Length: 170
Image (tube, rainbow, N blue to C red; front, side):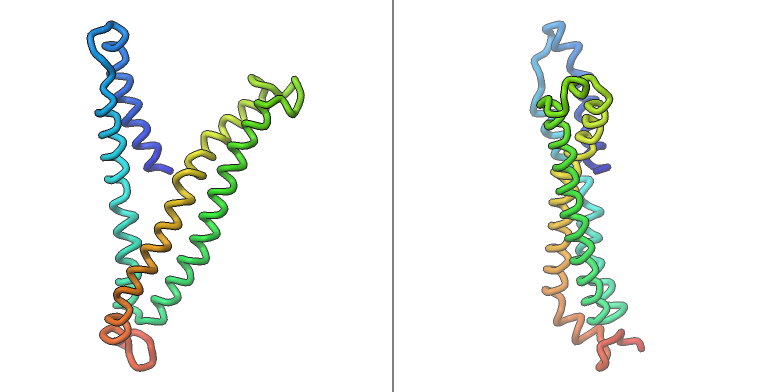
């Protein structure tokens, strides 16, 4: 979510630079620049998580052996699925809560402008990135770690694991 905030802030700064010239009629909106900022920021912010998901199974496998790598994968899968479902469902619930309040289902005292609506807008602001970015990206993390482990499983099992399954240095 921090990556989304950084990218959105960069796009916002660009839009704030463009608006005065657009309003004066001196310049047309430069959509491509905003798209380039968004794309560059999203790719740049994915470098560290990508490296962690690829190298953590390799490093654990080389240092601790095949059983530790299997334990790492089990931990990634169990905690990752729980966090992904939790993020996606809670983000969707907060988004739907705002829509429910705006529909007037809670009565006139809880319509737009009320404290309930203001709080639901805050919940929606947090919920949208949770639902749209954090949950799905955890699924990718799980898959990438598992695929990396499968690709290098033979090397980890034969070169970096003792006959008992532990690290080769024990």
